[in-house]
Image 1 (cartoon, rainbow, N blue to C red):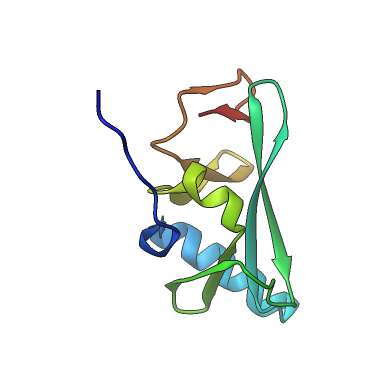
Image 2 (image 1 turned 60 degrees about the horizontal axis):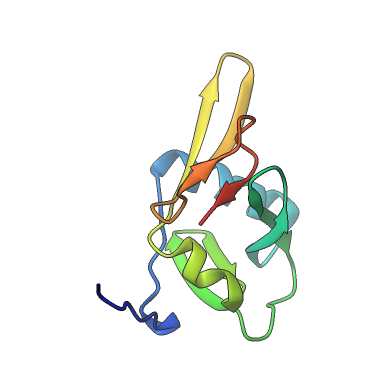
Length: 117
């Protein structure tokens, strides 16, 4: 058995080109400072992503400059759960959605709105 430690300073998140283009457009259109990502206890499986445009730089959040025009603020308590996550933007037919490809998620609920770590 091994013990893993987590250092918030080493946290890494990535973004696909499609997500970067979509989020940069949203940030620019609303004149926001960036996007804030948090994880809350909720949903069928235990945790849900909360993604919001923000004009205020949240104190204590980890800042990621993921792409030109895309600044992501991540709540420090969410970092261990989202470490290594890729943010994607997927369109299927008339529906478009932000997808989180999270290697820490052990299970997803049937509707895809929540996850377990």
